[in-house]
Image (cartoon, rainbow, N blue to C red):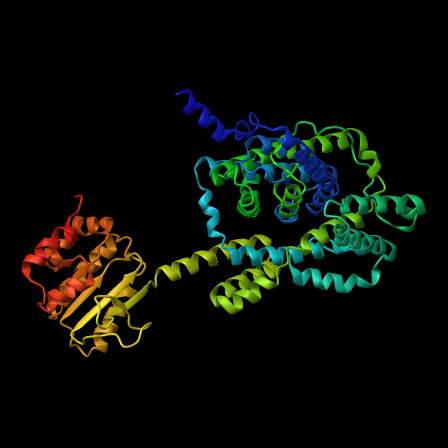
Length: 582
């Protein structure tokens, strides 16, 4: 009993699984990884907060309490949780519709959004709905991510060039605004940003643990301080409040919730999809633990609750930070605790150092981060391998670019579902023929020189028979019967690949049997799976077909049709073909 309770507790609190077995050998890797990721998080958190439309300090708040909470409840031991570019952009897009009258109200909406994301993710995890994210297919995520990365990049042009641009998530509006204001580039600001991009982009080539973003921040601050560039129009971060985040409260106004819910749902699904994808990739390299999709949802939900109540904004697992965390030697989520400790020390003692940080450097951090999200290889690959998935990727990409982030992801999900429905409504069907000299039957469209009789139609349906595909199946069968010029005397229906039959399928199958027999065409069924046999029995279809027309395999059915098998042998195998549990 105690073991059962302990097991359940470890399921809800994965930290109890690894912490009691923590080894000294883990400490060096966790400490190194924690400090490395913590150093990354300082400029990234500030940059992503600006992308979300918030003061930079809230990016640091978002990697304190949420990071600690994920370390306790998360099942991945290397996932680095915090603000990411995609979620930051979605946050800005969602709150924009509320027309906040002040920075304080904007923050209030951001806290509310984090709370709603936490509520949705926690609820999905508690209800074991982790599978829902599967409706975001890989082509949809790829198209959406590439388009969003372009939008994110364009949104940072105003900080990189220091020109006036509207807050928009439509590429056509942004392109027009950039064209109209390109002549107002502030060249010193652009120069600082360009230096930042070069350092961050190529700094890793010096050494994989080289803290390129932090070095860019230090150089940016040094340039502004040393040459008094603020007097020449370079925009800086300015005062960054010191101290730990105080307790905050989101809105519980239903009207606000109603407005923010669509974007909260989008962030919940996209954030979890991104987080779980990178967690699975890293976990494949570590065989000493397993991921639980539903517990991951719960952990991310709780992390977002932490963001909502401690002045953060929505968080999720990040690709780049998680990869760095793993490469730097992280063995457990103790590395996340070390990262959080470093952020806390920064908040307490070092925020004053960021006063002269140029906004262009933070824009450079975002631009380099999102440049890796634009995937041009996958569309090319899909063009050669799967045209329908290519079309879905391009459609999602274009819709996201032109109609906005929220419309793009919702359209992508709808497209995914439509493709699933379309494919389910058109199951693969095969007309079978005998391989000469054997008792083996194969698809006549795939193999040549098969033995096919005009008075015998042998068919196989690969998939369930249900309301969405019965018309397609019937049309295909009628076409095949017609192609044999009405000479068919027997239909052998191979059901080895039929996984289920619903009430509509059972009703239609009954109608087919009656109409075929009225037309002088008999029918027999072979290779029925147990659950399908139970359904046929429940709807009295075995009785309609006749137990003497149900066979163990195709060869027995054909032998019976040809009268080349005796009744005693048929009776011997009869129970194996017709027996049910009902």
